[in-house]
Image (cartoon, rainbow, N blue to C red; front, side, top):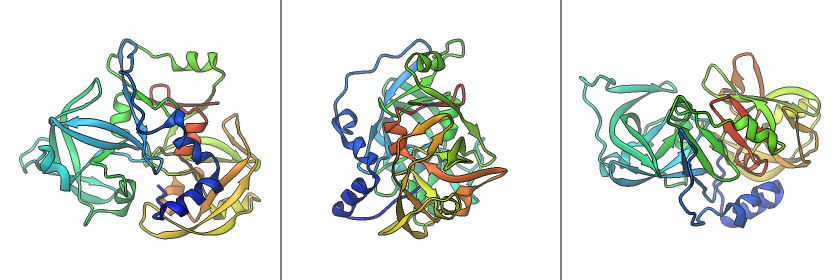
Amino acid sequence: MLNIPVNRKTFLTILILTGTILLLNDRALLAKERRAPLPSPPGYVAVPVHYSHWNKMMMEAVLNGHRARFVVDTGAGYSILDAGRAHSLGVSPVGADSPYGEFANLNGVRYRVGYLNSLRAGAMNFGSGPMALFQPADADDALNSRMNGENADGIIGADILTHYKAVINCYTRTIFFKTSSSEHLHVARFAESQNFIRVPLREEVSRAFTIPASLNGHLCRLLVDTGAFITTFDLKSAKEFGLSFTGTKMNGSFADGISRQVAIGKVGNLKIGDYQVPPQNLAASALPDFALDQGQAKIVGILGMELLAVSHGIIDFGSMSLFVK
């Protein structure tokens, strides 16, 4: 949800300040590294993903026979396709007589609906079906910011990820999509054998996914967002919890399109469930109200891609769990 439009020099400063982000560009997580086809366990199909320069999880796909690129975004409730690229990908808007409806209403904005004849990623065949067509010129800033600077054709959101009970391994850059109802991946059994800690994942009324956390001894919840560049706390909430942050010259453009100053501070007492996060510099800013307003939940921040990766995060939509170590 945080996009910082800066040049490479400033980006390197961000890497130094936030520390752990640098690991996403290490050899172990190199975005353009060539890999052999992944083995798929029974009842699942394994699809490789990679990280962009802005820590976005990217999935290469084939849409109607054309190569396409999607951001994998657990913070997006629905999958979308860039309307400007739809024609070149063989996708046209459906008519008024379509059984799927001519328009889709997402985040209070109406989008035309297109029909995908086929969508594949690696060995995974998603088949055919409708998808909302995103128009950057007149659409809401929330979706626009998620594709900002990634040259992506669309977003694979929570609708597809939950339908296939996806298991997202943020460290090995692999997503397992469930294709058989009779087979189970037994992620919890594997995680326990590898000393992972299970953190329950909860779907909120807004279709966001949150986890229990403790910040400086205060119980709270964090949004789990693979579309977020870095982990970011709400500045007001963090200060109420006794944390101190120093303002920087960086500004962050959030999903509401408003640019806000980003501060950096040492966070030494952060727990994700029962997992103690190592002390490190993390970001804080005045997060948009919609990111914090999740019904009864006290949301104080966004768990972003850099911490998910370096904590060996595994997001399991089958058991609704996040495993970290």
